[in-house]
Amino acid sequence: MNTENLKQYECEEATPQAESMIESFRSIGYSLQTAIADIIDNSIAAKANNVWIDFNWEGENTTLIITDDGYGMEEVDLINAMRPGSKNPLNNRNPDDLGRFGLGLKTASFSQCRILTVATKYSGKELIYRTWNLDYVGEIGKWKLLRYLDNESHIKRLKENNSGTSIVWQDMDRLVKGNTKESEKNLEVFLDQIKYMEKHLQMVFHIFLQTRKLNIWINDNKLTPWDPYMQGNKSTKFIAEYKLRDDVNVKSYVLPYHSEMSKEAFDNASWIKGWNAHQGFYVYRNNRMIISGEWLGMYKQEEHSKLARIMVNVPNTVQLDSEWQLDIKKSTVQIPRDIRIELKRIADDTRKEAVQIYRQIGKARKEKPSKEDIPVWVQHKWNGKRCYQINHEHPIIKNFIDTYCDNKSKLSRFFRLLEETLPLAMIIINESEKQENQNAPFEGKSISDLITLIIELYQTLIGNGFTQDDAIDEILRTEPFNYYPELTENLKGTN
Image (cartoon, rainbow, N blue to C red; front, side):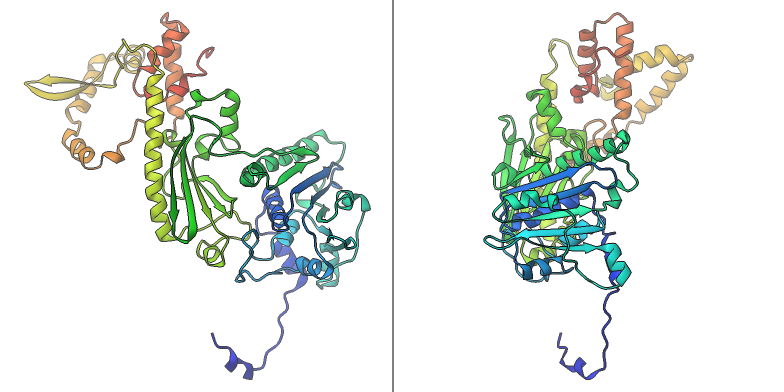
C-alpha cells in the first residue's frame, strides 16, 4: 500500500500505555511448560549446547533461572532483546531460529513472573544485565529498563561459562503466590508442575535431545528424549515418507502392540496423556514440536487407531509461518487446505495399517483356536432364505435372560422384532460401496460401558466355576470383546 499521500494529514503519537500493555502480555495464555519451551527456543537460536533450569524452593520467594551456554549478547543486542516486538515477524530468519514475533522472551516470562532479569555474556566481553520490574513500570507509567541485578548467586552458572545467557524469574505470582516454604502441600503442587514441565520439554525438544544438539538439565538432572514413534523398538513399523510442497516432510509410523514391549516401554509410550490421546499428528516447526498427538479435527481418537502416529515437519520460513498461522505461544497452527487434503490421505492409509495390526495381534492372542468365536448374531435359513438371529447362547445375552427377565416369552417376541426388521439390504449396499468406512464394534465410542460388561461377564463366569484363565479365554472369543484383548489383562483378581 502506498502511504505517501497520507503524509499531508496531521497525526499524533498513540504510544501504548506501559502498564496496560504489559498486563495484556501476561494474559496470552502460557503455561509454565510452554513458557519455558519458548525461552529454550532462544537458547537454540543462540547455538547453545546446554540449557540449565534451576529452582530453589522458597515458597512465594522461589526463583527460577534458565541458563544457556550460547553465544550471548552485547549490550545493544540485550536492550533490543528486552524490547517487546524486537523482531519483525515478516523478516526472514536463520533456519535455526525458532522465534518469529520478537515477543517470546518477554511474553513467556511476564506470564510467569513480575520481575524478569536477563544477564548475558558475549565471548570475551564483560557480563551485563537488565531487568523489567512490572510494579516499577506500573508506578512510573513508562517502559524503563533497570540496570539492576538482585542477587549475584542467580547467575553463578553464567559466570562459569565463557559465554551465554541467564533468564531469572522472580516474584512468580502465577505459580507460587501465597505459598509458604514450610508447606509440604505447596511444595508438592510446585513439584508436580516441574514434573509436568519436564515431560513437556522431553517431548517438544526430543529431536534436539536425540541428535545431541542440545542437553537440558533441571537442577542438574539431565533430561532424556521422549520419542513418540518408538523408533528404537524393532516392532515399530515405518509406513512411508512423503514430501509435500514447500519442503513439508511427513513420516508415518505404526507403533508396536503393547504385548510386543516391556511394561516400562508401554508406560513410557503413554507419556502425559495416555495411549489413546497420543495418537495422530505431531506437527513440528524446524524440528521443534508444536502439536503433540491429535487428528486436527479429521477424526475422533479411537481405540483401534491408537497405534498410528504421524510426523509433520515444516520449515520456519516467513511464508509458511503466515500460511500456517503460527501463534505467539507456538502451540497451534492452521493447516492450509491443500496440505490438509494430503495429510488426510496419509492419515487414512496409516490408520488402516494401525487397525489391521491391532486386530491381527488381538486375534493371535486367543490361545484356543479349537473353540469357535461366540458371535452376537448367528446365521440360519428359513424357507431357503438367509436370515439372522440374536445368539441366545452369547454369555452376556444368556446371563441377562437368566438374571433379569421374568417374562422370557415377551423378551423372545422383542428379539424376534429386531431380527425380522434387520435392514440387511441397506447394510449390504452400504458396506459394498464403502468398505473402508466399516467400523469395528465400539470403534470411535467410549469403551467405559464395554469395560463394565467385560468385568460383569468375568465375575459371572468365575461364579459359574470357571478358572481365571478359562474365564479370560472365554471372553477373548466372545464378540465384541475379541476386538479388545488388552482390556482383559487386569481382570485377574477383580471381585
